[in-house]
Image (cartoon, rainbow, N blue to C red):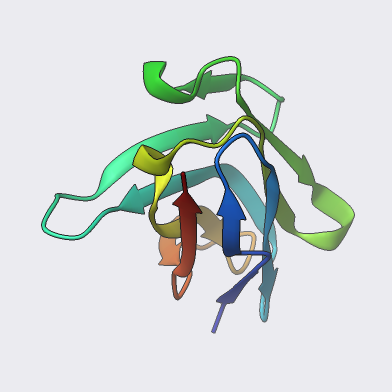
Length: 121
């Protein structure tokens, strides 16, 4: 079974930076897309960024130019570098990966546990 463990969240002043990490472990054969989502209180979960195995990257408009997604495939880890943080970035951040556990298996979707990011003015 594949698990994702997130780290790097916390409390930061507006204009500051945080770096989130999401490390996958378990029976992993191949990881394709890796994504970050966030969910603020009383809001729906929102997609933030995607990085493909080939390195193709997409961001939601509100974070473009401020956030950077990257991956380290030997470590099965995806990162989200968050710069110039704003109070409206405050949310629980979740990673999600598409993963195959064997050469014959289909892709499964696995979510991280979520980690709090709080930005104060």
